Amino acid sequence: MPGATRKALTHTIMTTYTLHTPVPCHAAICKALNLAGQERRVTLGLDLELNTPAGALIVAGGQPLNLGKHPRSLWVELVGWLIKQGCEVHCVQEACGFGWEFHRELEGAGAGSMVVAPQELSGKRKTDKRDARMLASLSGTM
Image (cartoon, rainbow, N blue to C red; front, side, top):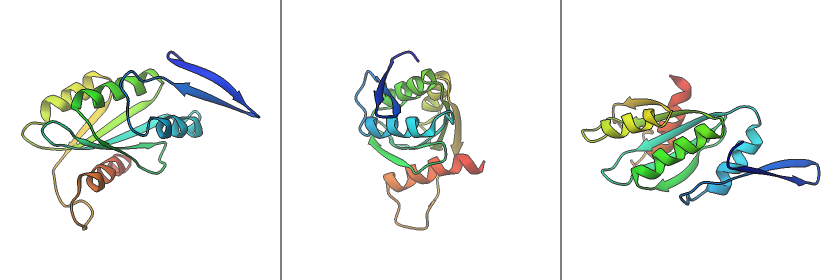
């Protein structure tokens, strides 16, 4: 894999991945990819805001990883990096007046991207982190 090194740990081979822009939970993403093995389906839920969408990532149907709020360029770079790691990436984001360009950028980076109508997704108090997790979970049901 480009950008990856392999280390032998006792009886386990672990891959270390390199991402140019620091992403919180980078170690957790790498761990989830290693645990997933050959299952490389990744879902990225994005709760849009004008400059810094909140994101949550699910690897191979596992538990959502909250990745926090970051500039749109970081999310596009993350998608490109995941594609280079051999992942099938699906993004789900809220529809809004300023999100369509972002949708096209995610698709341009190699992800399948779905835009869904914004709504109260969980029945609980609306928060960016909670909405991003729910959006990531929606991809498996569509």
